[in-house]
Amino acid sequence: MRMRRKKNLPRRLEECGDLLLPCQTQVLDFSLEEGGRLFDMVKVFGRSAPLVLEIGCGQGAFACEFARRHPELNIIAVEKVPNVIVKAAETARDSGLKNLRFMCTAAEYLPRFIPAGSVSHIYLNFSCPFPKAKYAKHRLTHPRFLEIYKRLMAPGAAITQKTDNMHFFEFSLEQLSQCGFLLSNISLDLHALEEPDNIVTEYEARFSSMGCPIYRLEARRAD
Image (spheres, rainbow, N blue to C red):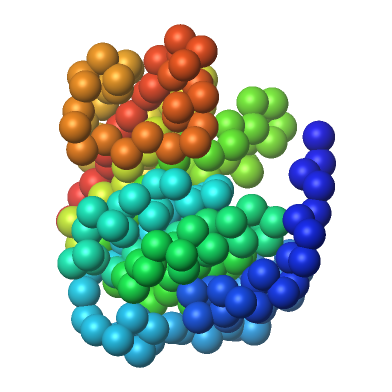
């Protein structure tokens, strides 16, 4: 079901302009040569600090809480749907989070704007599993995305993924391993571990309340 367009969306996005990084792109042209410019992160955040990405931030529950807990980090939350990212940006603005910015774009465009080798950690929280095999290339752990992440990640950087979808999780384990990532911290039932540092997202709370196990992995660049 298509999400209803939020009322006054252009005005609300404009009011969050200080938090939304400019990333206009030409539709379906993912080449690095056209239409992009690398962000200077020192200028963006007013300081030099380790950079963390959340790709597919939804309404921002994880990004905002993570930013609150880790003021020492610079964080960019990525979401391609304006109707969704506006809520995340408004929450960050109202919470006074100075170390969090947002990009309204698809993951394919990230190398146009994020400098190579600059990212210390990537979070993939409850990405769409695209369960039909013919749509596998759209999964955020498909090799075409993993190669993008490799380009962005600093030596020794890591990816953390959480999902409720067992088949997507198995796919991710296989693809990450085949692409040369070192896997660790694999959990088939994250909530059974009762980890105090786990930040529960909107989807996570919903799926967990339905009795679904939450799967988690960490994958590190093998440098």
